[in-house]
Image 1 (cartoon, rainbow, N blue to C red):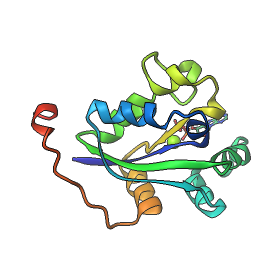
Image 2 (spheres, helix red, strand yellow; image 1 turned 90 degrees about the vertical axis):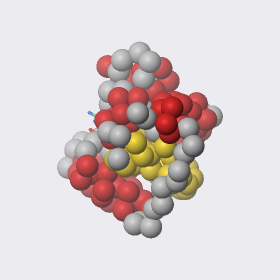
Image 3 (cartoon, rainbow, N blue to C red; image 1 turned 135 degrees about the vertical axis):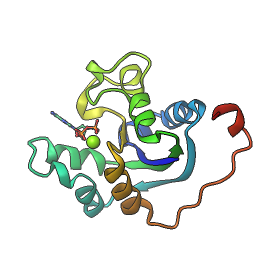
Length: 148
Ligand code: DAT
Ligand code: MG
């Protein structure tokens, strides 16, 4: 079983797409084990996107992510990291495969609606950063119909 960190960015919240986007992860079978809405403090945004610090788009990215509330969550499931990334689609919505969140709901890379961890180390770091270590999973009675 794997865990990943997913965040609905401020455009997703402002556009009233929280339910639509969470629904796609939820219906697929990824299990939500933690979730909260928050205004991202500057310091948290900078830690979260520290790997992009030297990129030209970094200032705009920080401004975007701190521009309004986000919904942060931890999803659990087999291959949860890859499953969530595939459900999101490519970073730039114009390159994303139709059927994915970014392709179906987005137009530009700077408003791509959603974040998902890109690997096991990133997931561990981001889950710790946003939620700490005291996460508890739960028994989903439907699991035997979703997972073999
Ligand atoms: P992803 O969010 O798919 O993991 P990433 O980690 O490479 O993509 O970049 C983080 C975010 O930064 C991405 O969601 C949107 C923004 N971004 C990335 N590359 C960009 C670019 N070339 N121009 C503008 N924004 C960019
Ligand atoms: Mg990334």
